[in-house]
Image (tube, rainbow, N blue to C red; front, side):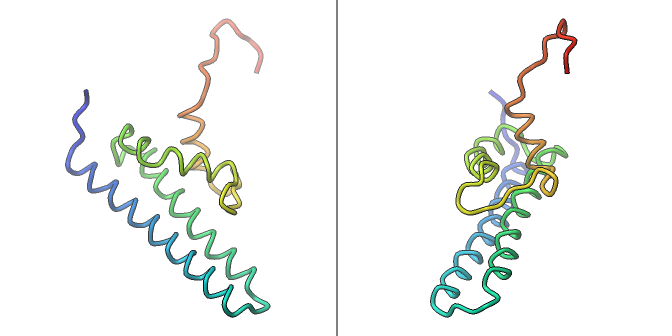
Length: 120
């Protein structure tokens, strides 16, 4: 079994903090909008939601660059990232906009290609 370094745990905790902060801000904004609706609410909610997705995308970038233990990261973020990519919880996901999330999902769930297969 691989030992996880203290630094990996600290990086993961910082990533978790960034994601949690974005989610908390999104939840608070949703509450505020429900209490006092206005005409610009859709744009404000989109910006807030984008901040949440950006936090996950940044976390995936750290993962891809080797800045955190891959097993620890996958254990901590797998379900959330898959739900995000599937468009659950009202988050709009675009592979073009959030390439790090796409690359992480591709890495986790890619099916090895048969070397004898010549098709694309």
